[in-house]
Amino acid sequence: MKETSPRPPASPAPAAKTDTAATPMTTTMIPTAKTSLWQRPAVLAVLGALLLWGGWAPWPTAWLAPLLFIGWVPYLLMERQLTLAGARKGRVFASTYLFLVLWNALTTWWVSYAELTAGIAAVVLNALLMCLPLMAFRQTKKRLGNRWGYLSLPIYWIAFEQLHLHWDITWPWLTLGNGFAAAPQWVQWYEYTGFLGGSVWVWTVNLLFFQALLKRLPNLMYRAQPANNLAETAAAAAHVIDESAFEWQPSFRTPVFFILLPIAASYLISAAYQEKGPTAEVVAVQPNFDPYVEKFEGGAKFVPYDEQLTRLLSLSAQQLTPQTRLVIWPETALEEAYWENTIESNPKIRRIREWLTRHPGVALLTGITTIGSYPNKEAASETARYRDDLGYYDIFNTGAYFAAPTAPIAFYHKSRLVPGVEKVPPILVSIVSHIDLGGTVGSVGSQAERTVYAAPANAPALRVAPVICYESIYGDFLSEYARNGATLLALFTNDAWWHDSPGYRQLLSYGQLRCIETRRDLARSANTGFTGFINQRGEITRREPAWIPTASRATVHLNDEVTFYARYGELIGRGAQLLAVLLLGFAIVRGWQDKRRRTTSHMA
Image 1 (spheres, rainbow, N blue to C red):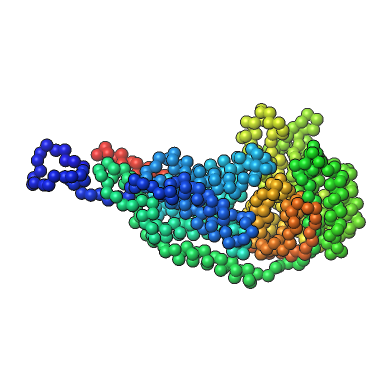
Image 2: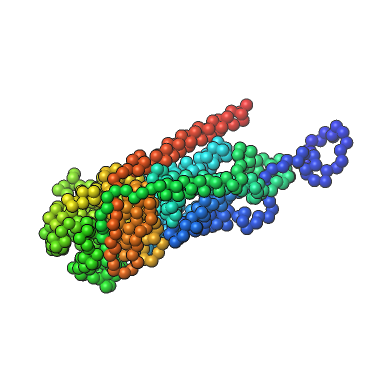
């Protein structure tokens, strides 16, 4: 900075060759003139998305899962770079969103097969929602400093994951703890923490690697340079990260230790665990009807419903033995308008009862589409539809349980519905109800409680939890079945909606995590996809090939013990939400105090 006063200096001084001669050199962290490729936010965003996608299920090996432990490091470096550069909020948001939308697109693009609009929304909107905890992290770091900022990041993220399990636009497919579905042998401790414990693990290791990287390469993003004038120094100082805030910067051995310790604990738990409960023989059927051309009326190669039922009964009979106690058919195996109050008069239901009479001692659980009616508007649910000729009614994605040839049918209505496909938030229903979308507007009906089917007389320990497709990604949801006395998880699904994509493979892997969390066996019946069985350690014990008509038989264990996680639920998620509220409130108050202090100082 040049001397501008007309008064001569008190003592002679050599002429300054640069503007910095008359002012003491101020060294600060400012951007270099040339930025390498790996310093660019867009490159870091793409790299982070590729790492998280690469570490996600359903790769056939667990050896790519460690990528999850470094998948967030590029984001942390990118956020640090943008902060050091004094980037505007819009640029920070755009870079963050690019990272998240790429991760969502690479991992869940296949949703568009079932419904194009829902697939696009799942990627675009979910990435937008994921920005919320990251923006909260930046604001907390800005107001409370690095120590509190980086501590708040996993808290905000896990609080968001907990919220994403329960609201109307729930879509927890990319909950970080689900990423270890390809490596169930690493997370046997999920019976205590649930899958959010895996999210804590991911964040802990990523933050340790990030800090270790800064310790090893402190000038990774910028190098120290002399500021040429006070204005430039002030501008850089306004956005600089005070590296002294990292009171403890670990070596690379520390995050490696935090990777290996839970894995070692998991193997010890697995080695000591014994399958629990009495046994029962179960048959799961895979009829293999293409839902786009064969399964539903109007398809180009539609298979009549009577022929579909014939195939289901035939495949079931092929696997029956005198020890078989339960047969499971897939989601919407019976696909017609079955009114629940008159279902017994349906010829196909009578045909099923005749088949059960010929095979005494066998119970049947099948997916079916049913319709329930209401006497008036006051009794109708919020998802009920209305027609002049039908009155108020709900359409349900249902599980129907025949405990015996003459036993009343027990219904369960799918309760975790796919947003945009099976469930439209009420506020959006009122908006789109006046728009012709070429189909029915509204949500499928559901129920609040978790139904556990009563055990048949010849298998008193067989208490079945009906789990329909998408519901199997919710750990806390399936835990309610265990608390209600379920001894077996019966998953029925229609994986063929997603074609031969990662979607149905991911869903199969998520089922392995649910078995660990509840320590329940899982019998899986898919229209087509993967039909088979998973044990209480989350190991796939039998899996039939996809895309062929087949059936699978196995002996399962019926455990009635309730795990710590199943008993107490998402303690981690609820705790993170409480801490997030406190941290965010503290950051807001601190920001207000700082603003008031600056205003007072300026006025003085």
